[in-house]
Structures are given as structure tokens and as C-alpha cells.
Length: 387
Image (cartoon, rainbow, N blue to C red; front, top):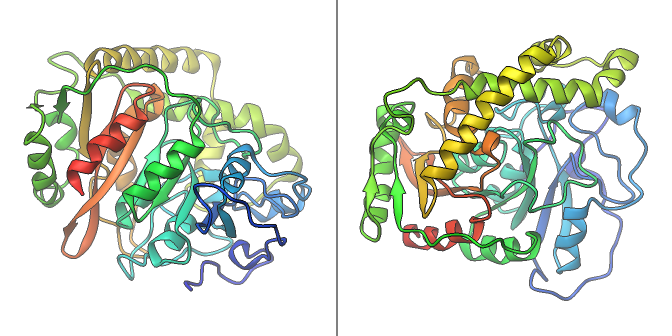
């Protein structure tokens, strides 16, 4: 088993899971890894930060998503590492270390669902439960060669989950196998809204240009396979006009909600945060209502554009602009292009599915399918073409 933790006061992966009776259901026999933002009865929820761990009680009941999956027969094998407060995209944690990437040894997993992705990629778990706010299921799935689903916003309960930004947070799933993902999605998601049949694929040139040429080349065969069953349109998503600044809007609303929810705790406990998270928390503390109003106007523009573009269509774009960086590499320059790709589904509340099947110099890269709100199952059906 991968060592998912550096020495420290709390090691989520090796924390004993209280014995539970087996439950019959479609997930019986499936080993489940749970990101350490979800409550699991009898265990602490550390949220990737030792001060949070020390100042919050042991969970009395399972988070709703955990209860649904275990009620269908899944057996929890461990709680897994997360970036601090889920406030990062790269899978590193100053307090507890970072798992190595089983699909790309010597490289990071991506985050914030880093331990979950590592456990599934190495085979210690079959199914991973993570969260995706700005790409925290999709990025580690892409970099670890996994399927990763960010469901439509509000199709999965967030009860019992430490929030980052309730407007964007969604519990999501990671697997090595599409069939298992479809089964687990059927268990986890609430009733399916009516959606239009998928009649076309959009692969906007302006979004594909955010990825490195090698990534675009590696993903082209997957796009060609989609083109074998549906027409593919490559015109820019935003047309001739200026694109909405959804990356800044994402940062502003996420920071605002983080501070409204956790600011009192930060002021009272003075937790130590690692690099990157420290700067984002500091920025969060200063967000203003004027900034929030501007951000929400940008978000609404994205929502209206995507509702039009995705009426009977899906978006196909690179999951990430590059393969996983090496451990210790400077990831700062990657944050903006990553959010350029992941931020659209986040701010618009859309389902997004990362599909594996391509490599750059032996490192996995993923293709992301984004659908209209409620079209989660349609994305899973379309992914069958790419198996």
C-alpha cells in the first residue's frame, strides 16, 4: 500500500475504521476510500489541517454521501489525505506530506482529492469519494489515469462535508473502471432531471489552446473517436467578444464563502496554513461585497452561455493543461490555465467527467466531457465510446 501520510499527529489512511456489518447492494464487495472532508462516524474529520482536527469533535454520524454508498454495500477501507481545507489543486500538504502518483511515480497526484486518487490508482481501493470545487476530482483523476466525475451541483447532498465554497462544492467519484463509476453514480445521485439528447460535441479552440501542444496531440485520438459518432465543432466558446473573467470570479466567490464560513475559526485559532493556502486565506479575508457583485455577474454570464451552448451538446476539453508535474516542481504557473479549463463547470454547476486513455511521455492525461446541468448520465453513456 502506498504510504499516504508523512509522520504527524494524524494519519488518516491508517486510522482504524470501526467494524461495520456487511450490507447487500449494488456496491457489495467494493472498497471505498473517503476523502478526509467527509464525516465518518467514530472518526475525526481533519480537513487536512491539524488545528481543524484539534478543534472539532469526532463525527457522530456519516456524511450523507458516505451513508448512501455504504448503504449500497461499499466498505470503507480508509480516510484519505486532502489538501488543507480543500483549498488547492495540486495534492500537497505541508503538515501530512503528499502521496506519490502511482500512475506517474515521482510526480504529484493533483488535489485536493489527492489521497483518494492515489488509493484508487494503486488498487488499495476500488472507489474513491472526493469533492470537486474547482477541479479537485477532475485534476487528480486526469493525472492518475482514472475516471473522475464531478456531478451536477446539488445532485449529491453535501451534508457532513467540510465546505470550501457551497456554491461550487460537489461530492464526486473516482474509479479505475467506467462500469463501476456508472453503478456508483446510479447509487449516489438523486433523481435524474430531464435533459436533451446529446447531438453534438463542442471542442472550442480557445480552451484547447490552454493546454500544451503535447497534451492536445495526445488527446486528439479520443476527440477523433467522438467525431466518429457525433459532429464536432471547434469554434471558440466565447466568440469574438471578451470572455467572462470566470477565474477571478471563482476566486472571489470561493474566498468570500470560505471566510463567511470559517473566518471566525481562523481568527480564533490562528491555524498554520502551508504555501498557497496561506495566500488564498489572506485574500479571502479581504473580499468585499462590491467584488462579489462583479464576480456574480461574470458567473451568470458563464451560466447563460453554457446553457445555450450545451443544449443538446457536450463540451470536450483537456482535463488539465499538462501532465502531472514532478514532485517539488513549481506549480504556481499552472493554477491559472487549470482554472481556465476546470472553472467553467465549477461556476456554472455543470457535470464534468474526466476520461483516461492518453499519455504524454508515459504520464497520464485526461479528456474532460462537460454536459448540461443534470446530464451526468449522458456523459457516462458517451464515455463508452472512449473505452
